[in-house]
Amino acid sequence: MFSILIPTYNNIEYLKFCIDSIKKNSKFNHQIICHVNIGDDGTTNFLKDSKIEFSHTLYNSGICEGINKAAKLAKYDYFLYAHDDFYFCPDWDLILLNEINAIGHYNFYLSGTMMNEGQIKFDCGKSPSTFDEKKFLTYYKDYNHFDFQGSTWAPSIVHKVIWNKVGGLSEEFFPGNGSDPDFNMKLWNKGVRIFKGINNFKVYHFGSIVLRKKINKIKVKNKYGSKSSKLFLLKWGISIKFFKKFYLRSNDYYDGPLSNPIKNSKFFFNLLICKIHYYYLKVLFKINKKNNLK
Image (cartoon, rainbow, N blue to C red; front, side, top):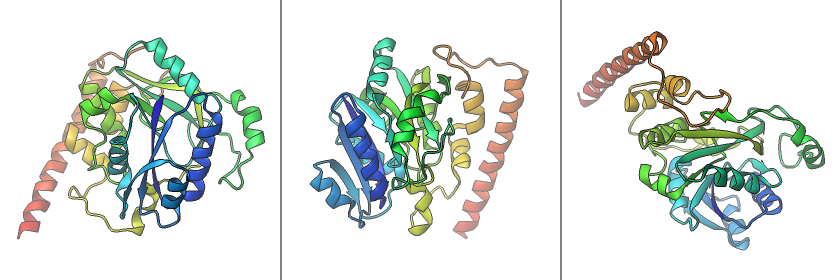
């Protein structure tokens, strides 16, 4: 069915909980692939014993490089990207499969709805050891958001043809911040217009656990030397906020495939602000580069 790609960084308690939820709450059998960053907490031994495939780096490669490495092991047509601090709700895959079949083609980007840390506030515990599974399974269907436009976050699924067409995730967005809208921009430029968040495809998100929160614990080399928002602006000439507002219409009610943005006075005013910030950063980047060469 799906190849589920999960990056992890010495987070074995949450990873075990996530994988267990996939196994017991799925209607179908899926390929689970992890990318292990470092993994000296017993993660690699756990995955070997569980016969779960994984790629591995002895350093924190970040989300993007890790997911790209894991994707090379995928054997199914659809790649589902997930965090290791998710709990998958019952029948999540049946809900997703029905949505895919209803679309009838693979030019789309679909994502789920996060509970607790996400769109729906429903606290059932801050960790696997405190998670009240009985309470959650009894009431989670009563808590709803809506199907929405412009999703840019995990859990998300794309077809491997689309993934390969855009070259996976952009690894300059280390450790992962900004990589989701960047990926969506690449999809947009390849003609994808369905960016749908699905209310009924729910996961419980513990939050603040994934490897981007552990960046200060290990030195990494980032040749861009900039925050994700600046990286995005320098790469695309517009801001993440502008892209999500005028192109993706993020968090609007879903009303079908997106159209090109309406280019009215509001659009051009905000575009002008983006361009001012863009050229300011370009000049600043050139000055810093020149000074570094001295």
